[in-house]
Length: 233
Ligand SMILES: Nc1ncnc2c1ncn2[C@@H]1O[C@H](COP(=O)(O)OP(=O)(O)OP(=O)(O)O)[C@@H](O)[C@H]1O
Ligand SMILES: [Mg+2]
Image (cartoon, rainbow, N blue to C red; front, side, top):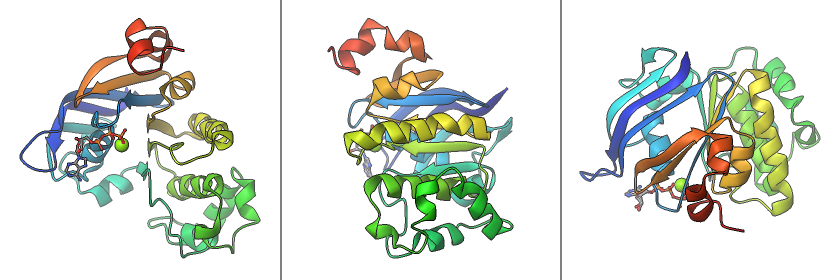
């Protein structure tokens, strides 16, 4: 059964719809990529499913239950974790404080130890301010924060966007490890080829509509993808 299902999801910031009739699903254990050009509506789709868009229609179903009527806060408690593209850590707090302020976590100090096993680089930086971390370290902290409540689904908006090329591989490998921890992933990525290489399936958006979807391997060899979204080289 699907973990997350979107049915005819549409909506926007004002009276004009930005996304239209999006059907999408993520199964347990999957990594699913959403790709598309700038302004295609990828971030808007993520905000719509998280309950962060002012006006939404259609249905969001988690584990067979509609969560469409829930506020964003309650979708978080239901198991959706979100790592936005920017402002995903508190710059003025230390690494440890960033982890301590995550809400809704039982036995928080032992959970911090557990989560940090996956991010050994952060253990040495626990008392450093997040604003002084490198881009890659900050992204690891954002992931660690999102993992604190043991979510079922991580929603990542362009996790590699602000990173130096050398760190991109590192972040993709962190993403690739999430299903083994029981966390499925729905990821928006500009680096569509690399993202699809670690994904089971993908959805391609254009002007707010899904124009192509399927198995990641099929998308990677689809000529329409190659020309439009993956670059031809
Ligand atoms: N807060 C907002 N208020 C009004 N319109 C917005 C807002 N955010 C985005 N839009 C509009 O919605 C459309 C889709 O934007 P969105 O951010 O979803 O695109 P995207 O696919 O995530 O692009 P990118 O790859 O550049 O991040 C754009 O035309 C944009 O101008
Ligand atoms: Mg975006």
